[in-house]
Length: 399
Image (tube, rainbow, N blue to C red; front, side):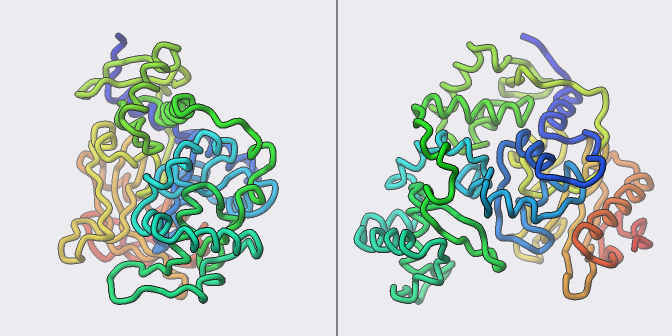
């Protein structure tokens, strides 16, 4: 078995997921976005918009400023090359992967979560009615069809209507999908066969084992080097399906077992992974970026213990509300709490913190450049001085 150092593993991981490449020359096109997604395999969606919605950020972190309309168009207009489904949580996934996710759709009655699963078992008549409404009126938002369906009250949470629950069950089951989003980020539901390209809809359905092999290989290519639990987590596979897929990919010599310095788990190297001599990167990284999805892997690779603190009470937060690690070279040199104040045209910096071992002056200089680049991409005119954190005094002059 081959052995690699932590530094080598770190650089393999960064290169595999698309960091360190030269930025595009000239105008960014859909081809550049396809290149990023070819490496990441999918883009996670999240409703948090305090800075920028999650699915836009991985592309920015890898290629810099780009028109977000290009990504919107990829999933909302023909010819679509991305569609929404449960990949790694809610995700934008390449349309050609839809057959590899049909096993999950087929298990909707047991795998769909909470309210949607319950509404499907208790009110199949409502689910059928909602599907007919989508077929008749789609693309349609939940708000446009839920007026005739009673909404439960008196409990905490999103308080979805029964119609919304039915829509989410049908979405999980693959009967409907998103034809795009409204300005308020609500899904516009439509029949899957009216959204996805016909040549994708007509593809044969692979066996669950074949689908798992494909998904694990995508995860392995995106990670470069990873342990089996991390490969499993990429598309939220079951342990049994993931372990079988890993074993078969090892036998096919797609995955190469390696020992990584300091790792307790067996690691697997994708056969196409490369080890660059250095990584040229200087960018903030979203909490929802595949590079740092799996927090234990992040800690082993980068010595970065990262936790998102959105749901932590303010008094108990360590670094801030929406904190992004700052990647500089092949290490995380800082972390910065950010907020886009669009009404005032200001990028606010509630906190900036230096990571252990990073050089304060060089990190502050590089981070100031990155914050200016980010503000320009977000259309914000100015940058507020950091309010707290050990790196704040050195960033005080950023504007």
